[in-house]
Length: 140
Image (tube, rainbow, N blue to C red; front, side, top):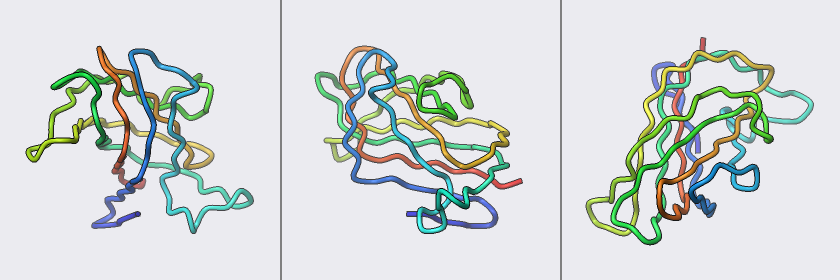
């Protein structure tokens, strides 16, 4: 699902089921594209120039009432072209219970050959199952 409001872009990934633990790993990452899937083809990759602003993650936490979570974003699947440095936030339980969310407020001006990114996550103590990811940005 994608949104555009006043040149502020947002994309949500829902229905995810990725378990993250206390270490970063190339086996546990999420590949995502900033532009809408229907507009993306391998032949016509979208170049990206913009300002990444916010990343929200939501999911379940196994074994704790809260936990610290660290996220970093890379341009490539093997985690060697960093776009957003490791950033820590607190997984906060939802008001109604059952889910946990964390917000990463970033200000990363980034220009790349396409809109493909990979998010890596690790927790401090528990297993976090990622169910939703939202990212917002402004185009240059």
